[in-house]
Structures are given as structure tokens and as C-alpha cells.
Image (cartoon, rainbow, N blue to C red; front, side):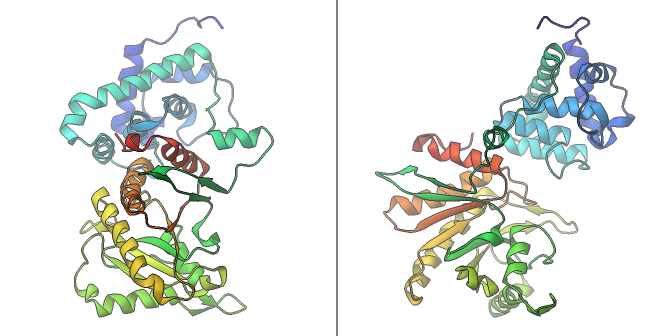
Length: 373
């Protein structure tokens, strides 16, 4: 298709993208962004309107075409289109984007941010040239669109040290797990579980482990009560535990599904006076390593012995780590454990096929090329 007439000037588009970065998409309708509005008018009509209108659709389309990785992730945080960041202040979005590259906020502002936003502008100009509104589908969704459904369970065989090991990847909610001995659950350093109606891994496990009467009324909150007892024994209510500490409980009602233990790994450090948390990748790695050590201690005490352990992407929710950062931190401990010829049955659980695709790509790569950059 030949280029459309009156293509937007890259410099003008970049200036407007920087304006969006400062305001965020939550205020997009208040901004004067004529170049972005012109591109949005050239696109075919979408199935529905986003809260920020057609201009937000242009921005999301442009970012979706950046090829993934740190560049796309930093762009999503910078503009406030990453999940849960829509109403974040500009300073918080910039800080989170800087963390993606592992640099200070000031260095990101001076060196990385213009490159990231410049690439967004490049893709917007490319959108204007092609005139397409289609956002590329992840591989699993593309397979489904062609007539099938992506698998909810995948068996991967990464090479660790001198051998190939099976790793099972579950793509569904954590409460649907069956016949996995131990499930790892992220928690904060006070071991305070969220309300059971929330959607996090720890809230879901609390809800699934509770015993209810036929009418749905709560009879026993097994996981919550056992974790509070553990915290009382270890003095945690009076002071925070060290990040990476692991508490153990039964799985409550989940024993009916073959889930026998829950290991609660303290990775989230609350920020005083806020509802936010900080998660450090090193604490995730330390916590997963301790979970394996506990598994080795507890295994023979059970009949049959504990053999399998399932891990979510610790810290990739409200903790703020990207899926890539979280998996890199988790896998560092898993790989170290498997490299010493440990015979554990390792599982991962994620809810989205896009994240499962990411893990599958990472585990299919050579062992010396898996560290996030």
C-alpha cells in the first residue's frame, strides 16, 4: 500500500507522546494532541472505545508493535498503559520504567526515556503508513483464532547443567491445580493475607483452602488461621520478618485436589503510610531457594513423600516486577536446585497465555542466555 498523504511529522508525534507521558492516559481527553488525533481518524473503526478514546487506541497499537522485551515494557509503564498503572503519577511511572532497565530515575530520564518514547513515535508513524488497527495477537491467541484453544498445560524440557528436566507449565488460576504436593504463595513480610474475595495468588489460595457449609458460609479459614499461628509462634506480628522468609501451612480444603502444603514466601515489603509494596528480585530468589530447602526437610515426613512444587511469578502483581524480572529471579533458584541433580517435580502456574508464551520462549533458550537484560 502506498504511503498515505500528509503523514505526521515524527518530531510533532514525539512531542505529543511526551505530553501524554507527563499527563498519563487517564487525562488523555484533556490534551491537545492533533497529530495523534489525525492518525486515529485514519484507522478503521474499532469494536469499542477505550476510556481515552481513539488516541489511546493508537498508542496501545503502536506499543504493541514494539516487539516485547524491556523496550515495550518501559513504554507501557511510561505512558500508563501497563495493567494497573493508568492512574499512576508521572513520577511513579518513570521510576517503574527505570527499574525495567535497572538504572536510576535520573539516568533513565536523561538517556533511556527519549529513546523509548522515540520508538513509540516511530511506530505511530508506521501505523499511519499502514492504516491498520489490528493489534498483533500473542502466539497462543493466534492459534485459538485459527480454530483451536491453547493448551492449559504444557510440558517443557529445558536443559539444566548436564541434563534435560521436565517442567510443567499450568495456564489457569492457582486454585485449579491438581495433584501438586506444594504450592508456593507470595506474601508480605508480616504474613498478613489479603481478603479472600481479592484476585491475588495468596487471596485465591486462602479462599480455596477454606471450608464452607452448603450455603457457602465460612466454617473454617484454614490457611489464614494456620498462618497467623505460625506468625504468633515466630513473633512476626510485633515485627516484620526478613524478606525471603518462608512459612508453611497445610492447604486446607485443597487437600481434596491433591495439594498438600502451601509455602508462604515473604517477598513484599510494605511501604510505610501507603498501600504499596516493594519487591526485590534477590529476595524472590532467596525465598524460592528456602522453599526448596524446606521441601527437602519435610519431604520424608509425609506419606508418600513430597516431590512436586509449583511456583507462580512471585512479585509480578502488585509487587511491581515485570514477568521477565520475576521469572529471572525465580528461575535462578530453580536452576541452582536442579543443577545439583535434585529430583523435584517443578511446576509453574500463570493465568495468561501471553505469560505462558514468555516462559516457554525463555525455557527453550540456551541455558546461558536466560538472564533478563
